[in-house]
Length: 88
Image (cartoon, rainbow, N blue to C red):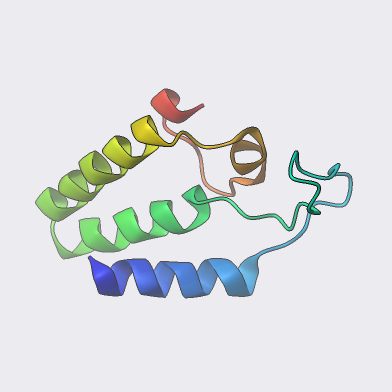
C-alpha cells in the first residue's frame, strides 16, 4: 500500500496543473490544482492490478478517510479521475 501511494503521490505532483480560472481558496492560497483523489484513484488502480481483493480493501480504507475528511469543493473540481458517487 505504501509503495502504491508513494508512486501515485509522486505522479500527482508531477502532473498537477493549476486551474486557469480558479479563485483563491478559502485560506487565501492560490488553487494549485491539488486533489487527494488524484493520487488515491491511481493507488487503488495499482493495488487492484496486484489483486482485486487488495483494490477492494484500498477502496474501503479511502472511504473511511473520506467520510471523516470529505473532499473539499476545490478537490472535487480538480479531480482528474471520475469520482465515485459517494464522493461527489
